[in-house]
Amino acid sequence: MRSPLPVRRGLNVLGPFTVYRAIGRRPSAVYVDHGGTAGRTGKHRLWDRVFEEYLATPGDQLQDRQGAIMLVTPAGDCFPVQVSRPTARTVKTAFAYAELALAEDWAEIERLVARGLLETASIRRTKQIPFAPAEVKFPENQPLVVTAGGMAGRTAPPGNAAGERT
Image (cartoon, rainbow, N blue to C red; front, side, top):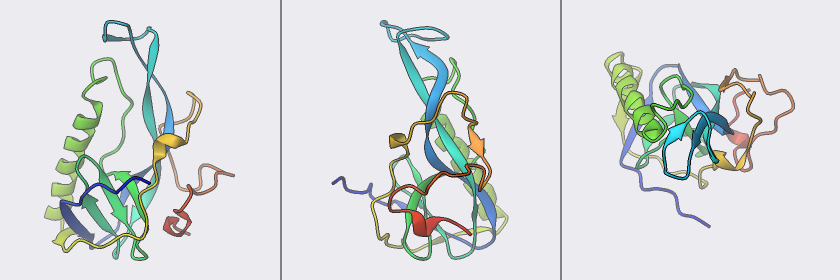
């Protein structure tokens, strides 16, 4: 069993806004050759995360967990989210993709703080180790972002059923 990453900062949600819940991954359009160069062809294919739109509401908390943003529900369920709208990996962003997405997330978080939708808070404990979205693989034609309920028949990731909005 792996330990959750240490929490560096907690932010309480004061008003509703959309975040993007990581639910799996799909093959990207970017490959890496034997020399470690990104391109449109190659031996090793990189992956894009797949996200579901999720409405963060008062009572939820965002947590900065060393390179990841997690959403913690009032019930203590926890899952990875992206705060900025996700984009697909490109050849240009192949190796800096996660860093760029996190920088965009923090810029969006600062805008949400300025709008009064988030405030710094004491860190809330979670009841579980966060779901690992890399374990769920989708086909390459899977949309990068799906709307809530857009995955008819998809079951909630193990241990996160209580985190689903109804």
